[in-house]
Image (cartoon, rainbow over all chains, first blue to last red):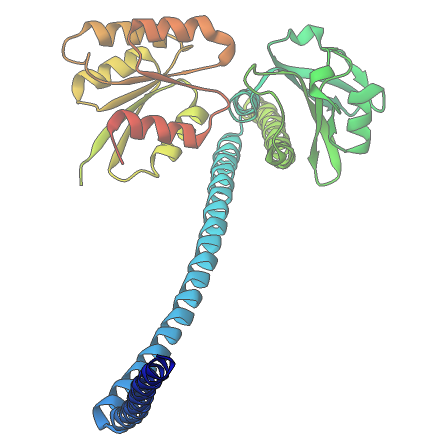
Length: 274
Length: 125
């Protein structure tokens, strides 16, 4: 029995060995096939990369990639330029508004000076000054004071919103009004909101000067309700208008005097000749 | 290009010139000036206007009377009227608007405001 058992074991061992050998052979065959296929893939890849079409595709791709990169940088440049142009546009718009405002002021000044020099009639000149101060400056209560050179006194010759008699007569150099007439410097109250109407101390006092000679002052006591504060341009406008007003007043007075003298002389001549 | 005719009724030559100067910036605007309400009415009856600017305080006939007469006349009642006023005269302004004024401008005169009001009332772009 044991012999039969041993024989059986040997047979099974042989069978196993044979199966094992076949398995090993099959494995080796698979490895060889794998090697062959890998070699074939490599071969195919080499053939593919070496073909002119593939090379052309690759070249085109490279060219397109480069173009994309160029376009990207162009786009960045264009965006930057747009940003700069938008900035410039904003500057131009601001400048346009400024120029428009300057243009308006110049037009107003032109009209004011044109009107002031359109007549040599003294009362008419005073009326025009009053209109300008109301309509261009926006003052409600104000007076025009002229200097009497003989007495060195400043006296109101025209007023608006206040009685002329209520405007004090001031000596040259006396108080705010007299000081402005003496120094020839413009006076503005530091804070309009804190100002309380005082006939001796106006909120604005502008000398009427011809060159360095002060012939009077423009005193403002109250602005129109909607005129809450002075704009930067107002200060310049005041001085320029005051200059023109002074010349117009001076010319008209000179003309009136010469007219009066002429009439007197003419009267004498008529008396002598008739 | 469409032409518009504007009547400025104002007793102050300075104001008339200020308004006229501002309006001349708009193309196709013809300006006619009148010294007071009566002169304004005369000019309204002799030619047609697209817009009227009028001051309130004027001799002979004031702006309020002018607004009232224009609005009660079927021939002119369609014409837009802009009154020129000071903020202090708020009652006058309200009365003028109640009488049929289309808009108002206040002193000191601002050319931009004149242009804005004109463009708006004449539908000029």
